[in-house]
Image (cartoon, rainbow, N blue to C red; front, side):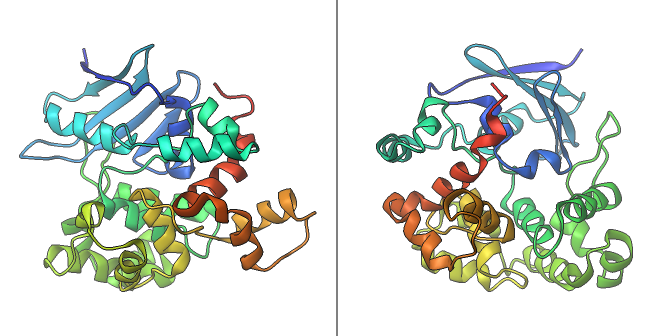
Length: 296
């Protein structure tokens, strides 16, 4: 029988909107069981424990964590679940702005706005690089290859996301030939080696005292991170100042707010200006509302 842990849900929290908030649920080692309403994730080994597969679901008051492993750190997994579901993030200021806007009032009504993230900033950074300049199917393939070829195996046979050590141990040719990472290959090598060598600590970005523009500059020092990638990662760090515009967001905005006509990015920025430091989250919620038309 799996071990079970319960975490009390915040009052303003939607499990369904959080796990489906963006495409991370579709990237290994996440799995979404739509029929059962469960999110599966393989947590990496911590504090001497091995990787453990966990199933996340909800009841009226709690997040239920079922852990399928004889060897795990319960405190670490519970802490990681709080992190990936953003259970400790405060969205009250954002909800006040969406209520005032009218068009985004659904966000507070449905307790939406939390963006699913990985347990580590390193994993989110690697996955963000896998989204740049390619189709979603290629993103999924690269991430699946990383997990299958470099991730440690859990007791049930699933694999965790690879550690920086595992990613630093292979060369650029491996990333090109085995991961099919293309031009990102040297970026993966450099990022992983910098983390292993202590030259870079992405986890400290979560608590950095830098302003968002300054932190964005720091992130952009990492090879492969331009404006889109840096602003996308910043959203996962809890900073929503940037729009993180890509071709999909632009096309959705043109269709929804500009009669399907192309317009300058400055017009998009003006449209969301009133949301101030929340504008990056506002545009994302605005462009994804239809995702939840038939979802609880």
